[in-house]
Length: 110
Length: 120
Image 1 (tube, rainbow over the protein chains, first blue to last red):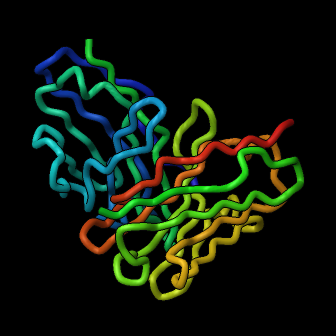
Image 2: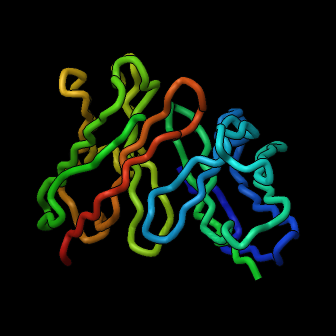
């Protein structure tokens, strides 16, 4: 079971849009509509941002959106804000009732 | 509001067994958990799924850890546990417990995490 592949870092200026990719295989992202994204600030627990590929839990700002195509999922932050500077992790269901996380992407607001 | 809290020793000697408990408050495991899980994060690194127990009683583990891991649930105490045997310094991490409920296909509630150190 290999970790999902995410870019180590992305950056953008306030107001810009940034997209984080999360690439898996036909045994995880490609097979299940069970991709989630979690936001983590230093020293704190992760927080759910997106579930079921593109479902936004109540309380999550609308500028966060998710999508999937084939073996790759994406998280887009539209209208980047300073408070969005954090590390973002994707997670997917995989075969045999297992789960796999991505390596994490640090978002820097310039 | 549901709350998950990890507890256990912060220091475990090499070759010993790491044992952690996740106490759930504000709701019943029996009625609100589709599955519960343990996730860890080594210092400065990303998240690693350790394993999960499902509401129907089965548990599933990360293949890389399956020979050393056991996850159990005690619904009478509303808690679940992690046992990781034969630990080494590579098992040093923050350990989180988390819930996957019935509304979202994801870990939607996380504990605050507990740091476990295995000296080298």
